[in-house]
Amino acid sequence: MSLRSIALTVLVFLGAWYWLQARELKDRALKAAARHCDDLALKLLDDSVVLNSLRLQRGFSGRRCLVRTYRFDFTSTGEERYHGEITLIGQRVGRIKLPPHRVES
Image 1: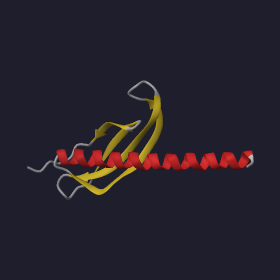
Image 2: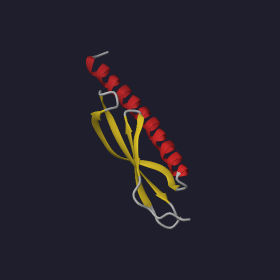
Image 3: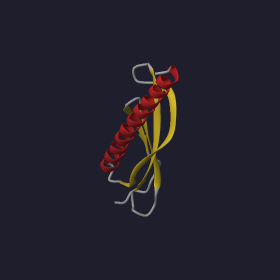
Image 4: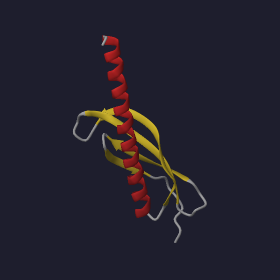
């Protein structure tokens, strides 16, 4: 094997590893957003989250890690659509941010 083929193989494996990690973290964000919406009697729309930003930042332990911010849509009345955000710091949920929304009694 040449050095070039070894480097290409390593890159492919790293890409596959990153893709699998990203899918797992997206699923974690989706479950946390759904649980948060359920706790507040809101309805998560489309059953999905979308990666909005990816950056490098210091995490909870003080070490640098990737911070992913996902966007999701929810409704409180069934008529309006609101946009929420969930942030994962490393592999942990950092915060969930919801804009002001109408609440039905």
